[in-house]
Length: 379
Image 1 (tube, one colour):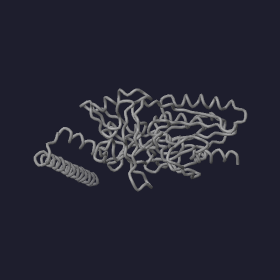
Image 2: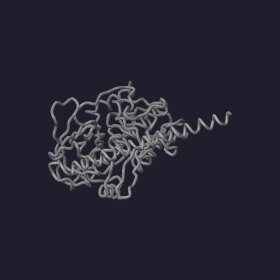
Image 3: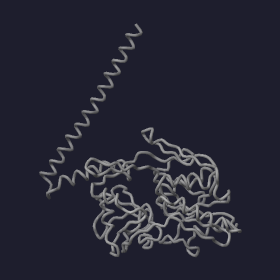
Image 4: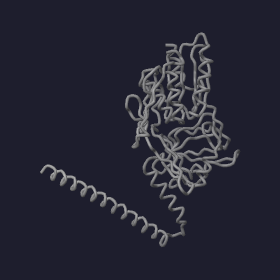
């Protein structure tokens, strides 16, 4: 009797599961039919003739960008250009951008690049490039408009929080060379380390600079500057976090598939021997920068000073397609040792110090955040 009941329950479940699957499939086919109908109406009724191939590319990109600001489609030409870019050196303005609500948003200008020198800031929305409206274009189309021959000018129109009117910047394109690490000894007592990006050699360069500063007899502590650092390689974020930790979790990634669920831990060996550490962050600190800052904060290894970080806490994978194009798809998210997600939240500073002035400049005469950090060592 029990067997019959179990078989009946199993059969009902299979039938129910099959029925739900069938209903979902029917809904999907209805949507595909609807899409075909809309495409036909556009082709027959739209005021101008359209290239259906281009419309399909836009539709694919729209599908991906509806998931999150960091997923997107690259047609074969754009994918090839991305693959042939030289490592650490590229032409353009020097800004990291994403798409938000159909508008290009600046994640961060890179130090000592045309965009940074012109006064472009993290959080700016780019609305026009050379008077061409950006809204409605894909992220890659907008990026291609900003790129161009070296030593030519481009006009960027931005909208900025706190400004009533749009602001125009005329910027001269350059070959962008990213020097990851800069260091100096401040006030004969504080080691200053500036990390601009997480490139392949960032950890090796940073280690060399730390060794130089460790030779200073009066060294009392470090300021680690991650402001306007748009991130980069996860492996570098893990290595650099490990420089300042002796043990414990640094970051974990979680996705739908088991292969995307990983945890990264620190090994014994604090490169600065437990000296006090202040980390400078702002809204332009994103991705790998947030991993480092968040891990050091969670382990109470550093005090974070500045402004809340950007909130880009996701991992994208480039997946090639049969047409020689590719999609950039978010496959997992970063989580700090505390279990908190970085995505859309960011990392909050322990000491909030607002950035002053239009331009970001590492200068002890004008940089109030840096000066605040130096004064903490004096006090």
